[in-house]
Image (cartoon, rainbow, N blue to C red; front, side, top):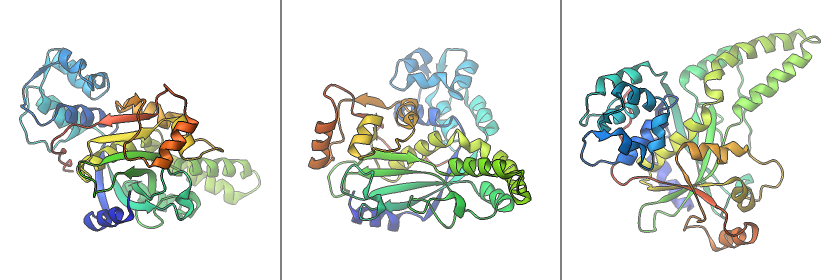
Length: 341
């Protein structure tokens, strides 16, 4: 990605925007997008199951809608309602049931923002190419930040200064570093997800363990442990759900703001080799289970916009005949509208 592309995006997009999400929304989002903007008519569930994204029907809330439909057919508009309550297109007989499912869902309004990870700084490590990365930051909802300030106070203990997190404004739950072909290249952009990461939950757990260890020696630590235990209840909904929420935000951003039709993601071995990670490897599940959940496919291919140097390193460090990257092909057509909350 070129630095002028980043400057253009920062000027064109709001500094902070909202991202409405509930756990499980990624399944109807992907399935609805895969059906495209074509004619809206009921589709036999058997046909949907055999489609590229058909296995998502086994996951909630789609599984709830399939059960309510009795195994017959589903209208694409009813699936779209699960992803976007503001859907204004045609709907089918399960529209009322879809609306009830969405109304009961525990929605959260996250806040997303952009920054850059430039190789001339500390970010020179763990990038595939000699180019800046665009960073999509996923900020906690306002309710979380207010509760954290009341219970704990200062945020500096839980933010790593050399990681791409915000030091002011919304507290950063997680971030994704992205590389892409330049806007000057003809055709829709393709996006490589370099990294998905969160420090916040890990640092809170570290502090909680320290407070427990010192409780018998220090009343101050005992009070701090009590505050952290209370705060852990506030944090609990995000601890396990943040990876899927982060990737959902990336897909939404890539389609809506970048017009991307193809996303790439590192496999663990390829990513470590290309980004020169030799010490502490990232959690393997983030580069295996997470892309699989979002219907990425493992391929013996690489993003076409990789530099010659990156391709050379790829050929030197990776065995022939093994998958190199995950890829998700997004459907053509207009992106879905943002949910109205």
